[in-house]
Image 1 (cartoon, rainbow, N blue to C red):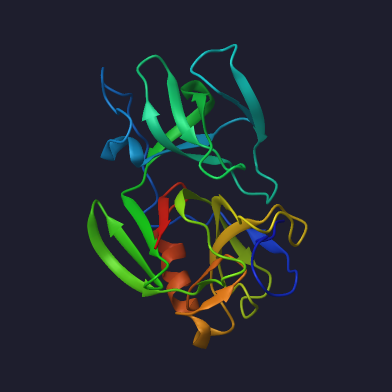
Image 2 (image 1 turned 180 degrees about the vertical axis):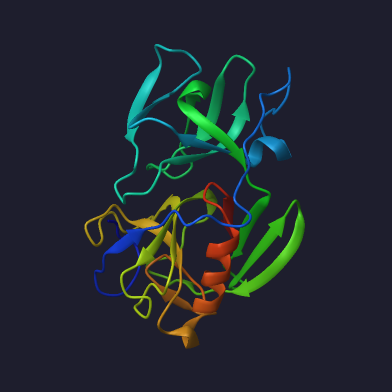
Length: 242
């Protein structure tokens, strides 16, 4: 069970969902020598899925540079995944970490994960209140969103979708689905028993989509979040700016 922990509304439990998407990532073959340098399109869209009950991450691609450990599944009960930023030929992956501070990165051993790909990327423009979905660089759809208020803003930066949760009440404040992000609120450190995780979810107030309304999460109309839940796999990168 899990909760979206930086969103407005009363506390409500969520059921983790691993319902397969028709566009879910496919397995990735071993890298060719010199492949997947940092910042390349291929590297930015690799996804690493933890295969054991926990995974150790490192501050450098060295076995004695242990940085910490994360459990699998995560505290929301969802499978642990990472967005990959670099793949080295010696068996190391540089990944984005779903921990504070925002933007944290570390290294994991490729033998501890299963690597897939996602062709999608998401961009949130806070000024325009708009979410743009691209597939292999081509725009798929643009959708209106609600964002955080001035006192509880939606943080900017580069993140990824860490999990897909299904709220217990699809007509409640989170709608029928909620993606968790690897990012956290800059001003809320605890909420609903969690650490202030930012979510991308539906709403029971669609008339407020397109405004500054939330405690940091990104709100979509329920029909839009349902479409994204069927289309977008976890591990997909999402950037927030404006």
